[in-house]
Length: 254
Image (cartoon, rainbow, N blue to C red; front, side, top):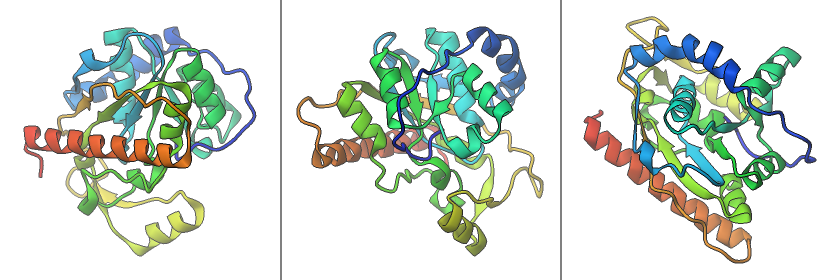
């Protein structure tokens, strides 16, 4: 998912290959779905038509977002189009071709606007890499660092925002705070964390994963200004924190 939304020139976007997703990707990740007993809570809250911006939390494991995408497609018929980090999803022609087939597009304002204006369901993780590599002392917390791209998109297009949080994904790995990761991220905006999974290994822990969807948030109408963007971003962040806190209480996470 997207680190941030960078300006770019609009260009035609590839269509998602649903047959490829259902034939190859879904069977490939089904063992992960069974391993984590994955489910979605509140799927009935997702509008079945019209432009929707699905704003997600970002764990280090990240594949909880893939599970969410496939389950939404299977349960609602809607296939989220993810706004992806260029350096992670489009660094090689073969990876770029795969990204096109599964519906990932480069995380730019033009791409997001084009998809939303076409009535698509668009997924974005505003926290990006920074949120993914945050240490375990910061689990169950939003780390958007004031990013406003998704809020501006919603206000410009009038797209409803649905929040998606999977707090238990933060327990798949224990991520340790360390100066090397912090320094590399500060320099390159990408950095390998120090972590462990099951026991002393990198095997993901078999924690039960549930993604929680919020009620749709309708962006206010009117002139889009820096102030209105910041205000709507703050509202979404408050609602996301509340959604996470409710899930943590329900699942009794520690």
